[in-house]
Image (cartoon, rainbow, N blue to C red; front, side, top):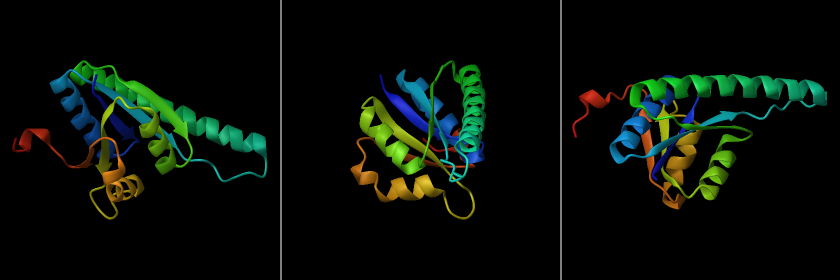
Length: 148
């Protein structure tokens, strides 16, 4: 089964990427995998405090991913797989792609203004090294207005 991997957060570009992935998955009878990334906390004076901060960030990311999954299910009928990982986004995503050969495409949302984002910048520079296509979806992408 073709799986479309989407990195999500609370941004508009992440929602646009998820809508794009869902439409592609429906078209090919595929699946969507949502990956929520939680940055590693650099606060290390007190291990228990750092662990609490990381757990709270993980809980927020899981709630976000489950909310996005519910919307995706309602809109497309696809129940996505959800993963939440803590650490450096580029490293986690690279390792995830290496260990999940079922991923047919990596779909990232690009910010409308300024830098497109660190993951888009990194993976677009290394797209030739990926085992799957990379789709970069702008935050204001509207499938209904796109020419196909």
